[in-house]
Amino acid sequence: MSEASPDIKGIRKAAAIIKEGGIVVFPTETVYGIGANAFDGNACLRIFELKGREQDNPLIVHVSSINMAEKVAVIPKMYKKILGNVWPAPLTVILKARKGIPKSVTAGLRTVAVRMPDNKIALRLIEESGTPIAAPSANISKRPSSTRASHAIKYFYGKADAIIDAGSSRFGIESTVIDLDNFELLRPGAFSVDGIEKLFGRKLKIYGTQEKRGYVAKPKSPGMKYMHYAPLTPIFLFNGDIRSIGNATKPYAGRFIFIGSDESCKIAKRYAKDTIGIGRREDVDVIAHNLFDALIRLDGKTSEFAVIECFGEEGIGLALMNRIRKACSYKSFTDADSLIKLVG
Ligand code: AMP
Ligand code: MG
Image (cartoon, rainbow, N blue to C red; front, side, top):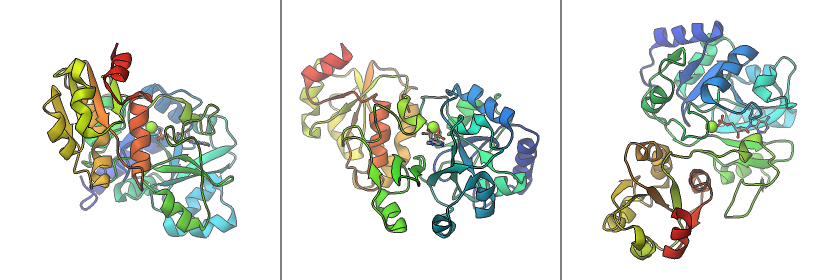
């Protein structure tokens, strides 16, 4: 189905599964989610089992109205109007959790992550279920998120109780997570920092150095401490000028896969075994949209390792580079010597 022509019968079937304590994979505007009734602790525990997710990494609760959000969390008056206006949107807020939210959802924290997804199928599913849906991204833990139904099917066919196929996600990058209490950015995402600062009329605190945005020794958000988005093929970030990619990869000529903008692929294809173009350099939204798909496709090819290039960190570029750095486990190189140290 698609947002333009949703299969209401199908959505109702999926909602019945949620009501009965089942697990449904569903589309959102960011990435696919794997969800369960947020008030059903056992159903939510199954999500952790299916994903192989550490139990101290809490879930985002998806709602379809502000009223529903208030059943999950305490929303300070000053934020209620703002959230009411901006939602549905790829913006997740951390708020004080209401009693009754199971421990498996909050990972035992006193706070809970809440958002209203900007996708008609997701909203209808939540409405028809009559309950908020706790849902992390629909991927095996630490692996790239599903930005297409086909990815989620690969991960969860025969495991989840239903998978709603609605093609490709609009953004392809997860939501931005902010802590409203300290007004801090916990995870850059599809909603820009600029957009948040305009919306709330305040400067957002951002962790970490430029290199390791969102990386802190003592994580403020449980998800920060885990490895993320990693393909099975080792992948390294090229931090240099694309015109020097030939020199920087010389010892491994023809042995690696290059992921980058279409323009850079044209240059890199002379030196790489294969290239995966993810959009024109100026179309950062398209590049962000295609990143996870490229990381998943990478594992369908065989190569010793892969190289991915750097992008600017403006707008969605901040989230894009956050995902790329994590996928590379923060391993980067600028020349042949530093690449040899990484590849061995
Ligand atoms: P995922 O749904 O897999 O995209 O991950 C959800 C993200 O939200 C993870 O990074 C979590 O650590 C973060 N998160 C969820 N609940 C909380 C919370 N109560 N406090 C801080 N971070 C949270
Ligand atoms: Mg995730």
